[in-house]
Length: 273
Length: 308
Image 1 (cartoon, rainbow over the protein chains, first blue to last red):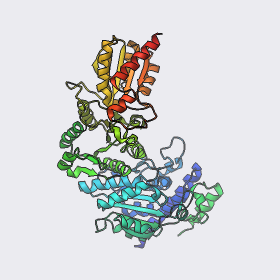
Image 2 (image 1 turned 90 degrees about the vertical axis):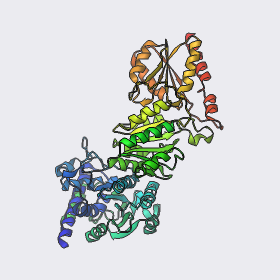
Image 3 (image 1 turned 30 degrees about the vertical axis):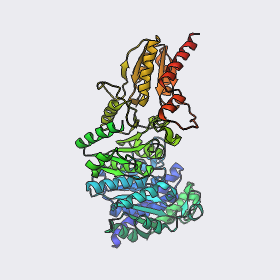
Image 4 (image 1 turned 60 degrees about the vertical axis):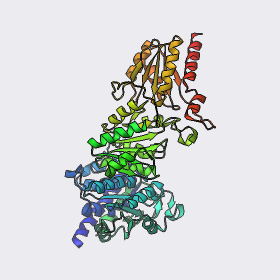
């Protein structure tokens, strides 16, 4: 349905613009990752996750964990857009006295887990999914991982555990933008064959274009799979997506856009349909 | 101690249907009753402690109260960051239980010696740290752990420890238990080392230095009030722990430095560097100054040196 896509696409665009302003203002890092996951977050929060400010602590709410906690600016942006706190508060990101810390903080309404050290989210998600399964609770648990994060062995402990216990309400999404902190994934620690790895751990694997909302949506809508397996979406993405001079550039893992760079980035996003 | 623990846990699980037990592929012959009676709330997470701690955090986030069980350093060090970030920082009701605190696993070697755990666990946010001395204290701290709305670390011995409290003491979290009252010497002991400490106290009494003896089943928060009060009454405070640096001696020194009392500190603890030899629990204690006789000698020698 084009209507739905229009809304989530517009939301993704706003996530990108908020993230750019936040990271520029704070002179912070990780804009590349925020742009990489903006479409995934937009579809999750627009179409999939059963969460709302009114049901912040409801037992049956869906759980979303940003395991790659360095994408916090984008997460805060989508939460503010969904009304968990005022959009104006985004200006305080990563600044003295703000609760919007540089990496995701559970002191922010709507953030389920503080993250920042990689390799934590999938195990916590597995615990949440195990509780749901054993206690017959309806919620789904979604964990967004980075590709570089998969170097951490703890993920593979969690993958083994979730496959063994058939945690079919657990969804992992890999933001596979092929660039990690200090090199390309292929150069640093190649993950390929990545889909085979997850299948070998007894996960239901779907490969998608992580910027195509219809693909993200239809993959999420097939969850839980009827095979009693946890699901993983391997989302092929572009680091820096949407700002031409940032795309595929490792440097934007670290750099903050200058005033002029911000202006040109926002102009590019505003021009998008 | 481990049987006192699991028996208490089964009783608690009867009353609280949110109570879970997650083990790291250890507990043979110990956890069987819990697993049989509460299969829906028991998980063997396998030999994967990082995931075990993370899963416990997730269960607790879903409103459950989780006991994590393994031995020696395994549920502490391998998953230290999961305990710090996912459990302690989020103030989740997860109790990390280890069997084999101190040198209990003697001949297994340094990999199995839990001699830095108190130092590491007590510095984490929101963390309560228990180190019971006998089966009675084990039951009391297990019951307390099941009602604390935050992270707990529980250091157990192994099995077969003597019952040192002839009747249940008046236990409160964070309070020392007084086992005998003495004159100008006070012995503070935490964990399973209490039995030789009590023997040392008998010997010191015969030698004309009758000491007070306290057990600290709660290592943290430390009972600073009792230590400070004794420091104003005593010539010396002796700390005894089956643990290396950064434990009871270090915390007590902070109290003494601020208490305004005149007591000096005699720390009895393990050296930082491990022995390069095998040995039973008793042998390793003896070799490193933690037998009753070694404690008495060290205290006497120190007091004599001060008197010169």
